[in-house]
Amino acid sequence: MYLESIYTQLIMEHNRSSHNRKALEDPDISERGYNPNCGDDIMLEVKVEDGIIADAGYSGVGCAISQASTSLMIDLIKGKSVDEASELADIFLAMIKKDITDEEELEVLEDSIIFQNISNMPARVKCAVLAWHSLKEGSKHI
Ligand SMILES: [Zn+2]
Image (tube, rainbow, N blue to C red; front, side, top):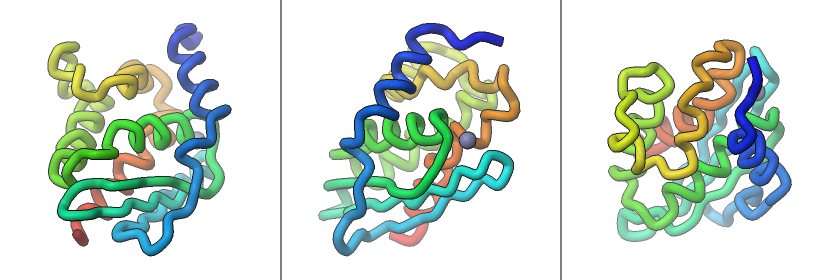
């Protein structure tokens, strides 16, 4: 099983770039995502102002896939409402489960669409969905 180059590139890009790797002051959502299968242990923090995600960041440790997925998700949800972000997480999770395969429907996920074929690598699925599950869990308490 090989990774397509764009996929590899994006993952490397997001691992290199640390723009979403930060702790927030007084976050409204702090949700830990832990994947014992791989050792990914990420803390997702989100600042919500008037129902809109004003800022988000993550800390912790994780493999390339979990960190890239988290960082891409943060890029995607910033500026969106909590409800919209939660819907995007549903779409992402449906994509991973192959419940949604229509590319047009998946366009809203922007770069996160690169994880569409992660289900071909079952061992890495939990890495890819970690942050999205954390986002959904955390959004429930807002
Ligand atoms: Zn992992």
